[in-house]
Image 1: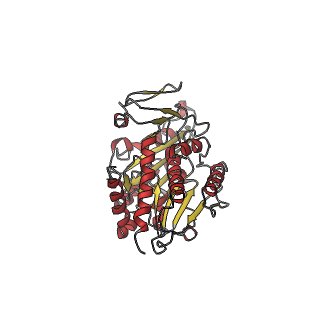
Image 2: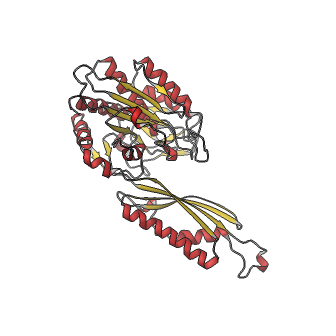
Image 3: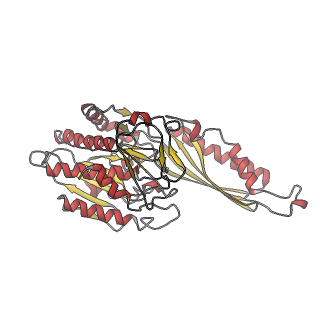
Length: 407
């Protein structure tokens, strides 16, 4: 089965995770894809594939004769899709020989436009897969899942030489807990790659340090006609707090620049809740970002009274660069593999994070590879068949390279 054919099967399965849930996984529907993947791995000859009670899929393929001393190499992707935009009833549309121009997304009123997405003309001539404009596509990260399974099938079917190969599929990556219950020892790899990036050729080992800030504002609501020096409008305090932060938002930053990102705001005069994500590649600047928001809260409590603004900051993940730098062969081999396939390698920082960031600090060095996915986390998401094929070939080329190495 071709990579894109698998992908089209996977995206039909609703696997969105949930930020509100306290269960593991956060949504039981993720088991639907996990069980299908176990059955599919069994069907291609990976007899030991299994899913555990927390919805983690593990499998391995023993080394071929003569490659027993090669490093055990892992490939990991996540099964869930984002909780903040629908992943249910996905209706993918295939456009052959894409002309590089605008694409009307069903009857949603949305259009895939080169004006807003300047890379689109570069995809001219390819086979494009898009949404109908009402859901995500699911390329993040079902494209990565499809590429790993297809590579595994190819290795087995063609009896290619390889060291031990380890396969892992995780739940709940999109809500930041994909690595929480990952069993590194049971996975059994010396090194691994997450296949969870953007365009083919992307190779990433630097990611944001990340934290989340939850803010509750407790207002004081009385009749507006008798509120002089008495009323505390929680909504206005929220606006005031946001105005105290630097104008460093995702829209205004790029590359290694971090940001404050207001993701949620809601409430009333009586009380209001805000959520921010804080991101920076520099650990020191990340400390300063947390201090900045803490100082803003302090000033507002001094102005309106202690307890008016409540703040809770939670660290989410760290920059994996320090764990990858001692084993840069992971990056060097990926760059060489891309060049050998005629793909331009782009070693660049991730303006986000992956399961690999957490896993690298859990003892499994794990940089990230592109999947051929674009504009993820929303209705404009799209992939190309050719891009996914190249990503599959890159996984196979890395297997080839590591089969010739010794531990």
